[in-house]
Length: 224
Image (tube, rainbow, N blue to C red; front, side, top):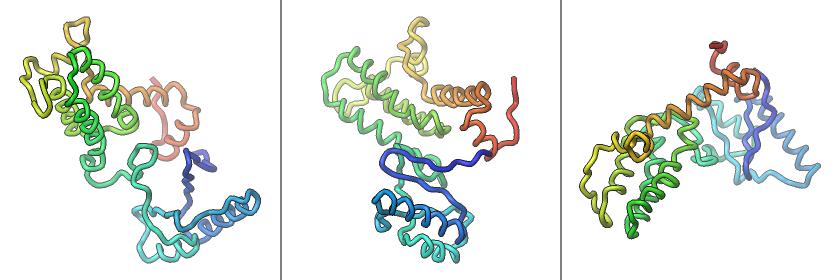
């Protein structure tokens, strides 16, 4: 697996190292050298340390002292994604459903035509989970709730009204040239986005992402 020297995103920096004293001290030494050279000092009171699940509790205090950082735990969300994926996947990815429900509830009070609703669904609602679904396999329960929320908005006639569902939602998701409206099935959309990532690993096996994933998670790529 090729070494990754640093990962820098937006306004925050994530540094990864082994949970041992030498690496923690070396990391802080590098940050101090950078601070002395650039004049940008690390604010330890605003920094936090996140330990892996295999790090024993007895060694965490010593590692915190080496880093000079006392706050434990991450930011929860980072770049719109959960920082830590563990426990119930339905709870982890529930924010996607809440985000879509927030958008739909804001639209429900507006007097929109069928055409206006179609534009809102295809351009905003169905695009909301795209980034998350391109990285993770979202539980089927979440996908069904997303489809149910979109269906309620499509058939509703006024605010907080479910409306009468005249046609099954799977028939509405059929492409337009086959008699449907071309709405996305969220489960199929999720699988298609993940398949696209797999396709990239096969087509570009020497890319940095492919080499890192290969070294970290699997031994070899199967070429078709």
